[in-house]
Each structure stands twice: as structure tokens, then as C-alpha cells.
Length: 96
Image (cartoon, rainbow, N blue to C red; front, side, top):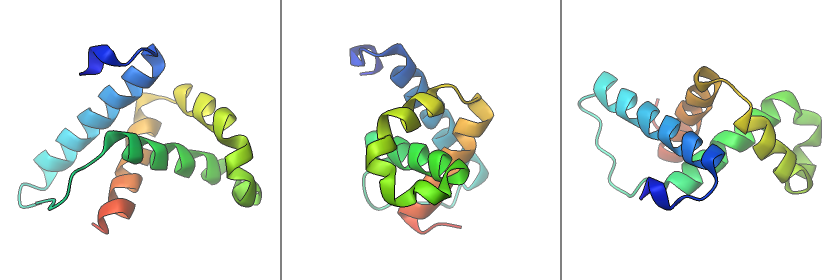
């Protein structure tokens, strides 16, 4: 399915998100998620968290900044990406 993602930077972010989900599973073998994890939603939340962490004063204008937020996220390190994916996972699952 990843080869169907046309944009290489978005494909890479999805790979990094999957790697972080695997790490979460390894660190928490008792963890069970009852619902589907939709990568688009998870990554979208991670992008938003990254942006708001640096531009909280523009929180009410996020929709206007969304394209810039995504570009900024594509330019983050894998560590920063993983950190925000973890935060997004916690938020979406109410875990941790």
C-alpha cells in the first residue's frame, strides 16, 4: 500500500509513523487498541502537534497554516516525527 502513496515525503512520514507504532507495541505488549488506527489521522494529528508546539499563538489559524505546517513536518528529523506520532497516538487513544 505504501507504494501507492505518490508523494515521497508523505510516504516517508507514514513509514516513520509505522515504525513508531511498532515501537509502541514492543514497549507495551499488553496494549490492545479496539478501533482502527488510521495513519492519515494519526499523522495529521502529529503534524498539528508539531506546528502548535512552535506556533501556539496561531492555534486558531491552523487551517490557514496547514500547508506550511505539513512542509515543516516533512523537514523534521525522524526523532521529532516519532515523538509527535507518539503524542498523537496518546491523544487519539487516551493512552498514557
